[in-house]
Image (cartoon, rainbow, N blue to C red; front, side):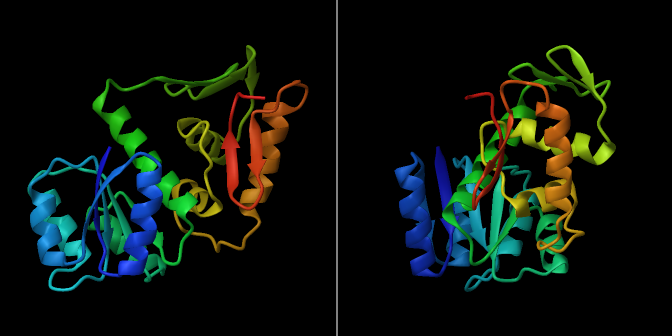
Length: 227
């Protein structure tokens, strides 16, 4: 998996590059916006990680130029600017995801993996069903069943479960859920996630020997069919 990292902070670049290489990525690092734009425009990468504030050419300009040229390579934006307006500008410029500094490596990796999965799914024929173990979600009828029993989910619970199923087996953080299920509208300290996770867990796992929805302490949540 080839990844282009455009980041002018050498310590951050070293931190990201080392971790990704240990996880099987081929990482090419560029520390200048103008050079990064040139390298990115040549193509050949599976994913881009682009800092927003760069010398010579800023990260959002790089992304806009790629999108204008028809390049749909997934892009994760890194930035110290974390207000809602900043994130919206990044996504509207063509970014696929936005991660605020400082961040943990496990979240960076999870977001990259999620982008790559979405890219793979969009390149294949549209899927109409998600399945994790004996849990099945029909995306056309929006019906969810476990072991053949229909689960009565509220709209937000359905959207939360859909996101977890699309990222099954992977840890999703609270901020990922806030952004992808609630759309940045809630303070990260709110208990809205805890409330909905608790309700969803009751509907998914109550009465079953195997629990699917698991809490990963200090990191987030995962939907997993393993023991």
